Image (cartoon, rainbow, N blue to C red; front, side):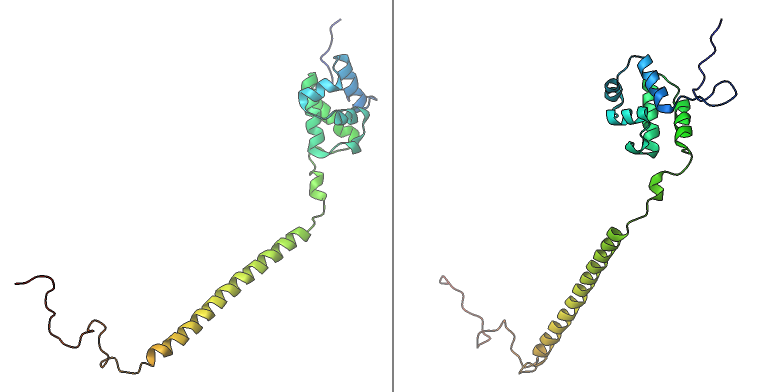
Length: 180
């Protein structure tokens, strides 16, 4: 008698699915290989509580979506099982469509943090603009104050003496230090 290749657990001949639930099948495969949950946890870095939840079919204790499928792939790889068949079996039991969008896409968005950030950015922009316009106004006022002071000189520019000529006479000064 020759043995046929191992068939996926959900195929029993051509007539239907196996009555063995996914979690029991996973536990049976693990026990047949003599591997503890702690060994799988150490090798795959999956918390033992998640491994127990997989074996006991406590789906609500699992993170869900791609994480669950990733856990199953890692365990199947460690135990030497067909990953795709185990994923398909899990999907059939949980009625999960493997091609469906992740549950995170269905979570309603909380717009409060986004609105708060946008309000803060708008307030910051208004403060910067107010600072720019305030500085320009101050600079224009300061220039206006200084301009009349420059225009109101007591003597016309042609009659003012240059600052270089402090002496009364235009004769050159005698050289200092020494006799001729």
